[in-house]
Amino acid sequence: MATFSHIVVVLAISVVVLLPASTMAADYVVGGDSGWTTGYNYTAWAQGKVFYVGDKLVFNYPKGEHNVNKVDAASFANCTVPTPGTGLTSGNDVVTLMTSGKKWYICGIGNHCAEQGQKLVINVEGMTPAPAPSSATKYAYQSFMALIVVLALVVIV
Image (cartoon, rainbow, N blue to C red; front, side, top):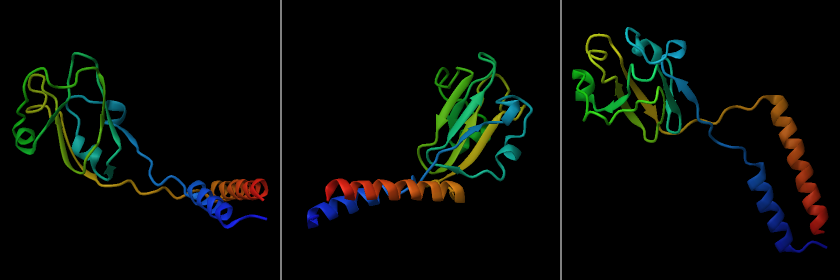
């Protein structure tokens, strides 16, 4: 016969196992197929996208032709490059969005920001909403978890 403590353990395990993951971060390739380049409308690219803490921005560009500098609002507006050598320069730079709020990025090479529009501003929301599972995935997951709970009860009893 199962004791009260066995039942509590099984219920606790069931709750932990049955809770689906609540967040899934997304990766955004800045500029899509065009990448991080001059003469591209990054305002239009960002329009309609919702960025969340944990998402990643991927800046793709030919190494040596551009860079990525995280700046504040004033530096963004004036295309003021921070201390030289502090930008990202790999050509495949990944920036994880760690906090909510506005984020500003510019290219610090030549006149790429001021005259050629190579700058991006986004707003980052707090938490990623949980995706809605498909009905097939939901039922398969529930069936699998029910089997796990039954097996746990059989082993304990």
